[in-house]
Amino acid sequence: MTKPKVLISDKMDPNAARIFEERGCDVDVITGETPEQLIARIGEYDGLAIRSSTKVTQAILDAATNLKVIGRAGIGVDNVDIPAASAKGVVVMNTPFGNSITTAEHAIALMFALARQLPEANAQTQAGLWPKNGFMGVEVTGKTLGLIGAGNIGSIVASRALGLRMKVVAFDPFLTPERAVEMGVEKADLDTLLARADFITLHTPLTDQTRNILSAENLAKTKKGVRIINCARGGLVDEAALKAGLDSGHIAGAALDVFQTEPAKESPLFGTPNFICTPHLGASTTEAQVNVALQVAEQMADFLVNGGVTNALNMPSLSAEEAPKLKPYMKLAELLGSMVGQLTRDSIPRISIHCEGAAAELNQKPIVAAVLAGFLRVQSATVNMVNAPFLAKERGLEVREVKTEREGDYHTLIRVSVKTEAGERSVAGTLFNNVEPRLVEMFGIKVEAELAGNMMYIVNEDAPGFIGRIGTLLGENAINIGTFNLGRREAGGEAVLLLSVDSPVAGEVLDQAGKLPGVKTVKALAF
Ligand SMILES: NC(=O)c1ccc[n+]([C@@H]2O[C@H](COP(=O)([O-])OP(=O)(O)OC[C@H]3O[C@@H](n4cnc5c(N)ncnc54)[C@H](O)[C@@H]3O)[C@@H](O)[C@H]2O)c1
Ligand SMILES: O=C(O)[C@H](O)COP(=O)(O)O
Image (tube, rainbow, N blue to C red; front, side, top):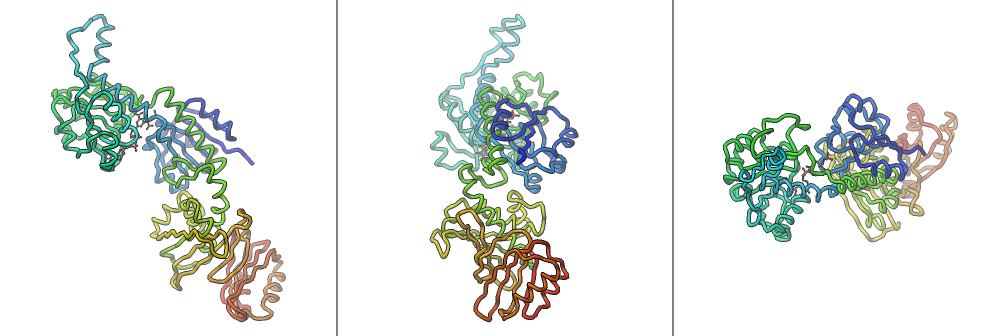
């Protein structure tokens, strides 16, 4: 088997490359390329490991013909076009915790730097000015810290601030009252926070709701003498309004680690008194960089080598322990989805996936995604487990999941049903020896068939002589039959024939089969 190939395109701790190699991937480290260079190169790779410098745009994804996974060694994924990656079936993962402590510590460091004007005091002292009377600071003890965003980093900042004997007021629409109590913070609305905070620190992602959250209007609602820290994302603070607030003296200080445009090589804020900044260093400690490099490489290698999915933003998680157990189920699910997809011509408003027995004890999300991938592949060859759920939603397909832990006729069973104009139609399959997918029922008729390669599906009236006639027809057309699976509702009733054949069945042969006496439906299937 050829090894998966990974490109590390941003500066990353060398542990990442080591882990990729140890886990069976070939790895290239090529950083600092232009988008055009990356476009020319990306087609070779199965995985792309990045930090925040590489911008994974639609154009890069269009050129990424082999790409299966993008791993972000860090938290923010605003440099990845996730909808485009999902549409292309590329998994996007991040490492949501590896640099949170480091970033929280940077926010606290910037808070102290603002409170005591450390950068300017340092610069003037080293310039020989000994400015002992020029830097009157403020204590943080007893002050109110306004926390905008109380997730991983925000909650660490809150715990450190409480340790410094500050009061913490948090604005986060998703913060539950119980969690606020647990964190020891007061949950507030944004206006209350703005009115009360002596220091404001931002810890939200950049979204349509958070963009410009500290707008000119909101900055005007802050307390005079407020100090503002942004270690989250540029774009959360209106930089021009921040400059005006600093110039007017309403804002006593501001510290930015992140800018609206990065790299920020120039800014009206540069040189403004009481403004300090760092070049997106929030995650830059040895500890955090080792953490995120190890984590991203482990996650990506796990996915490329074993199919494990951890911390994906566009696909359900699948642990490395679950992956081998789920693998045959996903194969079965995809085959059943594919069979239904190939056999239904109408537009389908609803698909139901029912797991029974042992299958019901498993993580259902990957099974559902695999059914949808099989089902929709008939419509688009580029569908996979990543983009199938998005595509289903886009096409208005209602997806139902049902599970019954009690065993029926089989110790494990997956049933896929679709709502068609003719009513609900379903196929079901099991695993023989826990690994071999087998179709065991189709449209209410018991069968036992392996779904593989080229097949023919025939519905006919159960009558003597039919099997001989179909065998003769295929023989005359030099089509060799591999396996023969027959099921019927009752003797003389409707029968279903599933044949595996060694070569594709041409349209004329299907037409001739359709004209044989008693034949109701004939279809060629391929798995
Ligand atoms: N400067 C750096 O180097 C650096 C390093 C790591 C992370 N970050 C950034 O820090 C930010 C926070 O990271 P995290 O790990 O804490 O993320 P997180 O997802 O754990 O927390 C984000 C919080 O923001 C809240 N939120 C979402 N929308 C909101 C809104 N409209 N108003 C208020 N709160 C809202 C969420 O409910 C959540 O609690 C991210 O933008 C990340 O990219 C920056
Ligand atoms: O979201 C993040 O993890 C940070 O912004 C860190 O970005 P970096 O990896 O480019 O330092």
